[in-house]
Image 1 (spheres, one colour):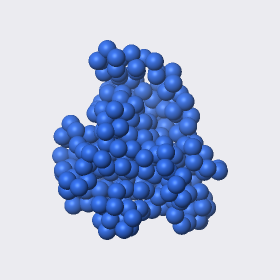
Image 2: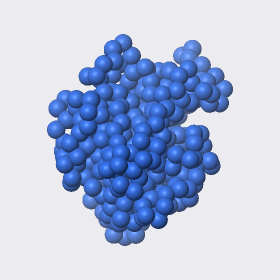
Image 3: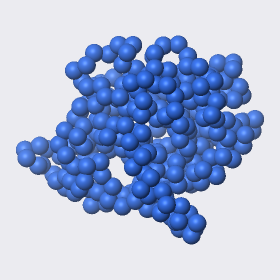
Image 4: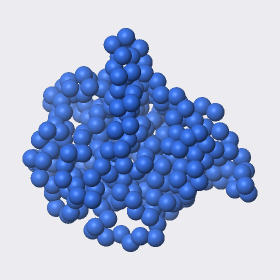
Length: 314
C-alpha cells in the first residue's frame, strides 16, 4: 500500500464516474474510505506507514478534482484515526493516520481558494524507489503556498539511517523566489512500523489527553532558493516534507492560523513549478529530467479546480 503507483492505478476504476460528475457539474464524493476496510488491520492501519499512505491519498484525490473524502471510523476499528475508548487493554490514543488529516487541513486553509496538483515524478529513473515517491504543489489563489514531498519507501524503526535511506528532491521555481528562505516541516516517526513517536513540524498529538505538545525533537529546517530558482530537500525513507513558501506564517497548528501567502505580484499567474528526484540522495537531480513536470497556475486550474474537504464520520 505504500506505493504511489499502485494507488494511482486503483483510481482508474473511478475515472469514468469522476468525469461524468464533472460534466454534470456535480461533486464527486468518496465515502467510507479505508486503507484496509472496513475495520482496518493491526500493525497496518495503526502504524506510521498508514499516515504516509493517507496523506498521499488525500492529496492525490484533491489533484483529480474529487471534492469530498469520507473516512470509515468506528470506536473499535484499527482503521480509525484515533481510538476513543479502551480496547483490549489499550487505552484511548491518537493513531498516526490522524496526522495526515491535520496536514491536509493545514494545506487547504480557511479561504476556499486552494488548488492542489500532482507534480508527477513517476516517470523518472528512480531505480528501487520507482512508484514510492510522490510530489504535489499547493496553490492558495494564484500563488504557490507549499510543496509536499513524500518518500514512501519502507524504513522500519530497527533500520539504520544512511545516505542510502533518503531521497533528494530538487525543486525548480521562478527566479523571482531567488534567495527566499523557506521553511521545511517534516512528518516523521522512528519508522513505518512505529505506533508512537510521530511528529509533524515538531508537534506530538499522541498525548494522553489528545492536546498537542512539543515533540521530543523538532526536525524543522530551512532551505534557501538559489539564484536560478532551485533548491533541494532530503527526505528520509518513510517520511514526508512540506515546504512552506509563506514562511512568515510560522508554525501552523490549526487551519485558523493559516495566513495569506506574502508573494509579490511578480509571482503571479504564470508561476511554474517542477520537481525532480535523485536516487543517490546527494547532489542535485538533473533539472532537465523534470522538464515535462512544469505546471502553470492556469493549467492547475484546468486540471484540479478543487477544494478537497476532509470529513470524518462515525
